Length: 304
Image (cartoon, rainbow, N blue to C red; front, top):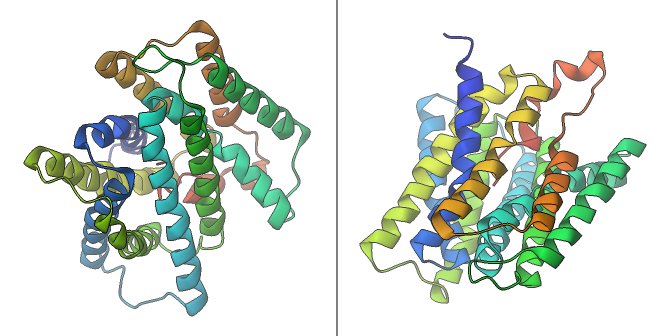
């Protein structure tokens, strides 16, 4: 196999992540319905993929593993609902960049609950990132030229917090195959979100449904397979640097497809968030090689 395949796979997965916002908006569905469809289609496909590869035999989840996986699933789909809802209240690019504060939130959770030491540099980066969020909040404009609604930014921050929670739970399940973990979490999301369809139903038009099928197949099942096939084969620094592809593609899509025009203070704020949250982290030599294999920090459950 070509040694560059993992690099291409991870890059493709990040590029797909950057187009999710457009797919969500084009579907015309409300956030809970979109998250349900993504969970249903993506979860079924990942279950089929895992079964075909023999990863479901024997069933290796203990009761503790299952409860943690379900908890992580609740965090994961909750994060989707908040993020998808934020797109309409701010913009794809603003929501996506603000959402990328989640790696710093995960550092805070690890320090609070696992006793991991937070370096001074991480604290500085957190301050820079949230300073960038403040700058975006004060200066960003939506498609209509009006200032973005702070509710949209708050929802994106809430989504980041929930995703950090999902990643934190996934850290406790590193012994499980990530495809199986993701499938369990998506099945959880399908069950939990199903009642929401009574209030926010799926689209009735063929176009809207096709967008949701695209989201579940390409932007969930295929994207997860690409991520999990590559992340364990790439250095941590490479994974971190190529993660910039996700927000960059989201901003480009927002500009080209939806006419978003970032102001210069907004641009500075975006750069501050991305530089602080996605900059490669220096790891000790003893752990550097193994770090990429602990997929939870990009489990996607994927980055979105």
